[in-house]
Image (cartoon, rainbow, N blue to C red; front, side):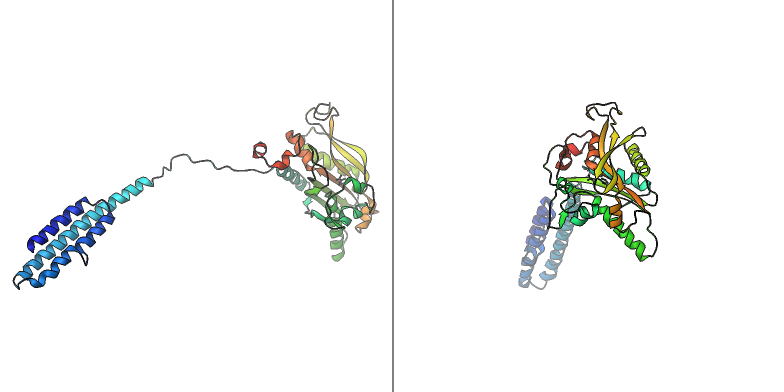
Amino acid sequence: MKEKLEQIKTLAISEICTAENTKQIEELRVKFLGKKGELTNILKQMGSLTAEERPIIGQVANAVRSDIENALSEKKSLLEENEKNAQIEKEYIDITMSGKKPNIGHLHPLTIVSDEIKEIFLGMGFSVSQGSEVEFDEYNFTKLNLPENHPARDTQDTFYITEKILLRTQTSSVQVHVMEEEVAKAKAENRELSPIRIISPGRVYRSDAVDATHSPLFHQIEGLVVDKGVTMADLKGTLETLMQKLYGADCKIRLRPHHFPFTEPSAEVDVMCFKCKGTGCSMCKQEGYIELLGAGMVHPKVLQGCGIDPEIYSGFAFGLGLERIVMRRYGITDMRLLYENDVRFLKQF
Ligand code: PHE
């Protein structure tokens, strides 16, 4: 029996020595020391020994058990160490290696220029009013002195949601809302009307076919100033300041008489071609100036319709096309490029 124990010990130790991982060590522990293990099997036969033999064999068995246990734990910690090192090796990260640059987007050219224009107007004491794209026909046309059946409605045909609700064709609808709100506020607080100085940028819609310079959706920025003693000179000065900030201090503007139902007098505003500085080139079709916006003095009927006395107050308004300014700024010749969201195009700005 003693030899058998010694044999188990030799076998166990040699198997432990060749174990390759901690899993095998656990298997060997079960094999030799477990409940159904080899050592236990031998010890079960202790009953057949004599009383003198029993303590001697018992001692040997204990020594064998503790030798195997020691061998197991020694080998186990060695293997654990190796496994840990292998893992560290595998998961090693070189923190000094240069990383992959993430692709960061940027603002759309329409947003870049719109923000710039907002900033210029904020600097002149204007605030930004948000209008809604879905509008009552009354605010888009009627209250702007374009009654039903007015021929100018045809030139701004749009998308109707119901008979009386449409997608606005111009940001001028915001004028009426702002004037009505300011009049109501003054009334509620029992004071006279405070000066109005707002711009309102946003999308407008017309049922235009799509080509290089037309789109059923585009952007305008509306401006409105109402106060006592506002004149056409204030309008010209404001627009000149805007254009000089956008295109440089030597930029000039030109007002041409025009007609809008909601302004009187009305003007179309041209800006000096920034490429040829007014002498004429291919960009401005040899004209030296480029048409950029519509403007004028708010029509007395519009003021009156909002509850403002045109004998006391006067105002000016303008509406500029954002796409035109963006296209001039960057030399873009096809408006559709602004809406296609092709990153190869957008990356350039
Ligand atoms: N709303 C006009 C348009 O879309 C532009 C405009 C605005 C003209 C304000 C005069 C005053 O053509």
